[in-house]
Image (cartoon, rainbow, N blue to C red; front, side, top):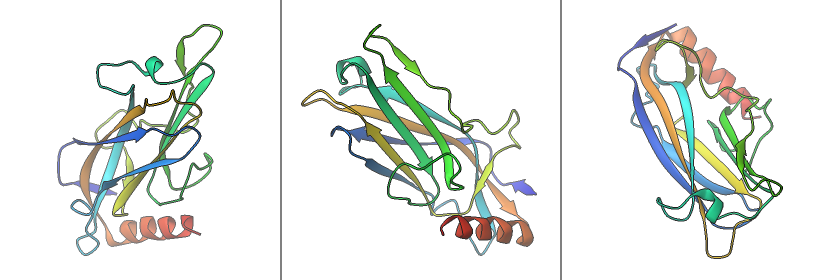
Length: 176
């Protein structure tokens, strides 16, 4: 299906959530990687989420209250907020919780895979020109922030005309 043009590389974007119970947005520009004329697309191999507090040296526990959740999603279409797992635009998701009873943090197992396979040839192909990151934290301590760094491991691939068209149609259909 896809012929690799590059080795795997990493795209990184940080989302800073500073307001409780409000969606916060960021984007990763893919315009340099996706080319419709050459049927060039981005193949995503895995997505990692790194949670930090207000400063890089602070843990997340210093920024959030007890019984708290931090939800983050990456989509290839702008939905304007968090989406359900059956949304075709969903690329990856993560959830981190702070429990009041133990004071500890735990990460919920995602229902959607952030790792698309074992080999460098596996992955989700994206033909859109941006990835959209949406995050929400249920309760942030005043004057603090939750920083979530999203690391997308990807490569550039060439597709056949039929494969490129099929992915583009699926993406357009997901927009409706």
